[in-house]
Image (cartoon, rainbow, N blue to C red; front, side, top):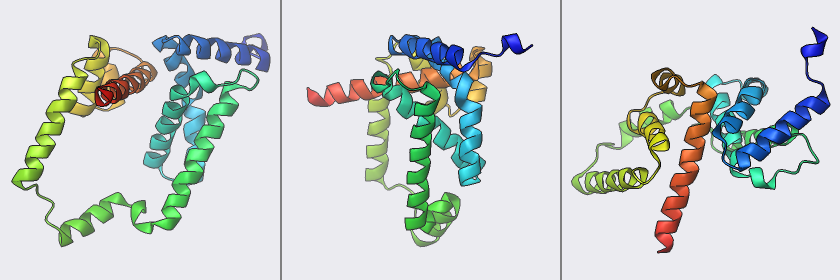
Length: 197
């Protein structure tokens, strides 16, 4: 029924409420914003880059930038307009990088070329440094609250997809993505503060 479709004023108010709740740390609000705009944002980007994997990456990057900068959002504009502007700017930057460096277009092809030229196996020193970084990262992850810690472990240590994490934790995919974005922000703050010491 036409009555059930929110008008622009209703969606503007709904988005503003979700943004305010997200700023205060409500994870459901982050997930709600993603659920509302993820598909349309992805399809807009897919038309521009014509590559589903790149479109998915750009979509996640746009949400990540928007969520990191929510405090700068002006309620004079629609959240969707602001979000799509961020996504469009990211896409333009991505396309410019592609024009400057055609090798970036196919990272698998580039990796194959590199492996023909250079031995990509790690030597003892590189292995030691890599292991040391992984230990440091795991120590920092341990400082997160258990929910964020679990999301980071599943995504980055066990390398599960968002969908697999969603099934395993019985959470909507949008909630998983929003939680991982928030966990990454917290990790960044922990690392930044530990460097300042």
